[in-house]
Length: 192
Image (cartoon, helix red, strand yellow):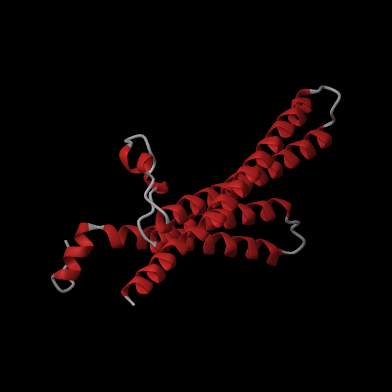
C-alpha cells in the first residue's frame, strides 16, 4: 500500500510539468509579439523618413505626424503585451517547476523577473496590464474627434480616473512595503 501511495504521489507531483506547455507557449507568443512590434518600428522609421520631404504640404505633414504618433503608441502597446507574456512565462516556470538560478544569482538581473509566489506574479502582470490600458486610452484619445463640449469633459474624466488608478496602485504598493506603515500597524495605528 505504501508503494502505491508513493507512486501516486510521485505521479501527482510530476504532473506539474504540464505547465511547461504554458511556459513555452507564452514565451513563443511573447517572441512573436516582440517580432511584430519590431517590424512595425522598422516600417515606422522608413515611413517617417518622408517627413522632411519639401514636397509635403502642411496638411500632409500633420497627417503624417498624427499617424506616426498613433503608430508609436501601438508599438509601445505591442512591446508591453510582449513583456506581459515574458513575465507570465518566467513566473509560471519559477512557481511550478524551479527557480531560475541566473535570475537569483546575478546582480545584473532585474528583480521584476524574480517571482516568489502567485501574488507576486499577479501583481507584476497587473502593473503591466494597467500600463497597456493607459496606452490604449492614450491611443483612443489621439483618435478622438471632439464634436461637443461634453467630449472634452469625458476625456478629462478618463484622464482623472487613470491618474487616480496610478496613485492608488502606487500608494498601495509603497504603503504595504513601508517600514513605518508596518510599525504603525504593529503599534496600533501610531504614525511616524
